[in-house]
Length: 238
Image 1 (cartoon, rainbow, N blue to C red):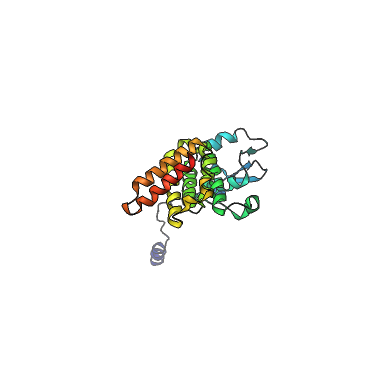
Image 2: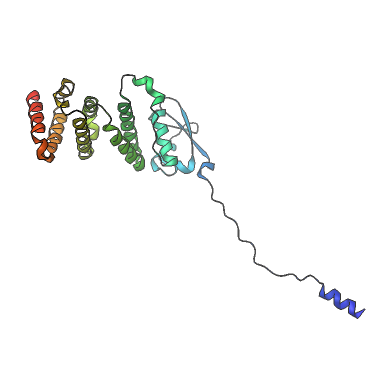
């Protein structure tokens, strides 16, 4: 019996104290946060996760004025898509095909520029620096694609908007003019180009500054041709 008792003691379960398992922490997806509702100027409702909305102080302030749980926006659904897509993903995206019917006579690049300009204005209004920068990049990419006469008209019509970005605008004008010159060396002789001059003193002054810089930066081999174009343009505007 004594031997059996010893065997029972040997088989007894021994409990070992262990450290508790560490708590597993899961990152909460911002897409799982409560949706914030926004109404565009054309009546479209956008549902955006609050975690993204909270990144932009201007939107947070605007939501304090919401009606029936929905915050009214001053821009339409086209701009709202670009705005919220960039806010949530960090990417810039415009949809040309959705609004082709509104500007049937416009070059595709011109529609892109018009939209990007509106996006840029909204980005400035809301202090959305990432969107503002992305809109500028988008404009830069499309200026070279635009026929020079459409480009000139676009800049002249929106010159007042660029008053705080004149240096940047000069650079874009130079790129566009150099691109036009590479495609068609005699573009400056076309009446469709010359007719864009003489409507706005501020625009004409800007154009003269840009073409003057181009003239100074040209290599010797192309100086005479550019100089001739410069004299031709000045002669037509005087």
